[in-house]
Length: 71
Image 1 (tube, helix red, strand yellow):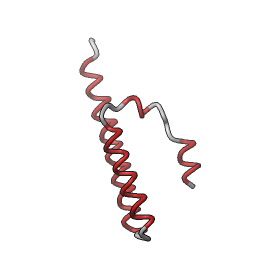
Image 2: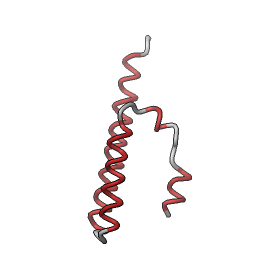
Image 3: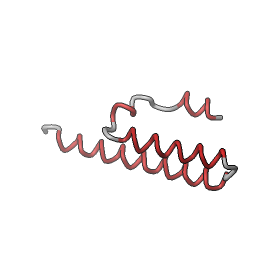
Image 4: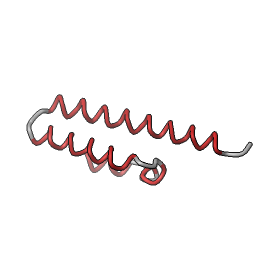
């Protein structure tokens, strides 16, 4: 399952969102810790939060770049 998700992930976003790497890495560690502790519901909530945070960061980055672009 994780392998399938990883194959479909748009990797260019790693370089698109400045400063997101540390937060994303910490969120991944939190998910892994919850899985290792058998806290599946918590892991699911943390993963959903991670996805939402990444989505919001991407939206902010795109909007910031739109305002920087000369018209």
